[in-house]
Image (cartoon, rainbow, N blue to C red; front, side, top):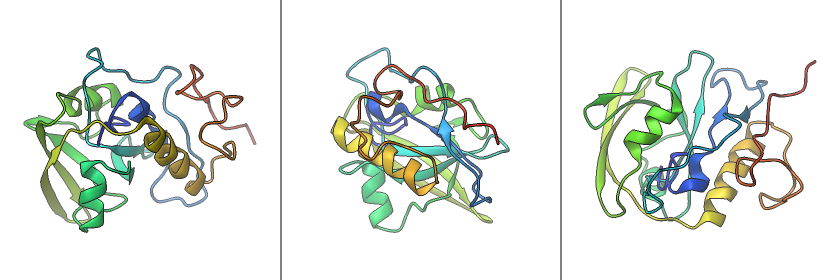
Length: 176
């Protein structure tokens, strides 16, 4: 949630993926046809790539290298699958991703308190909003999609593939 949202940090991190946390066979898809972009181009986030499960709960998937989420993940404080419950004093459980993004994004160097639910316990931490490298953000989103079984180009920078980073939106998975 570094430059999140995709929550991840900066604008590039605004790509959320949709998947079921409980179904390994589920596919991910791009969350929207238009990426979430902060009004203030200097806004940054915590560097998290989130997924949305079938109930609408937003969960941590992976972190952007160099972000405060990456630091928290390395320290074992943040785990894949942790469900985001609140940002500051705002409840965001099952909130639209645009609402989550608006709460996570802010001035670089500021901190935001986030609360996650992990099984039957809550985990609260203060994470720094940082500017992160757009390439690192794209790679984190790409890796999350690959690990979730979504068909993606071999490189996160492949401009021939429609993505939230090049104006496209991905779209729903093919019908079976």
